[in-house]
Length: 113
Image (cartoon, rainbow, N blue to C red):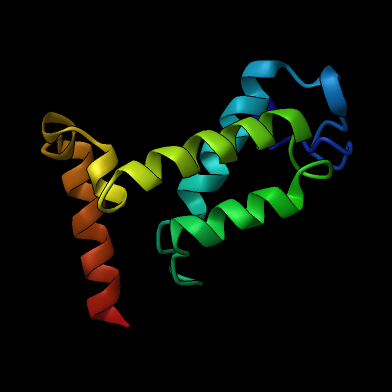
């Protein structure tokens, strides 16, 4: 529930800074990255690089600035090692039903556009 709180206190419960549980601050980063890099009915997906830039821009207002810096740095390193975003998942994970459903939904959204 707390992952929608903002570092600056602008979230639904008004929690700010370190009053937001650390677990929620981590989930907020992961959730934002996932949301930004996947298509939605109202917008196109962003590249991982643009999504990371968005998170950097929102560090200190939306996100914990220290955790955002760590998250962005770590994910940039991982993306530099991989050929593409999907390469970050091992073969077993990329065959997982959840990943297949996400791919199919993305395909259906593209076809409907």
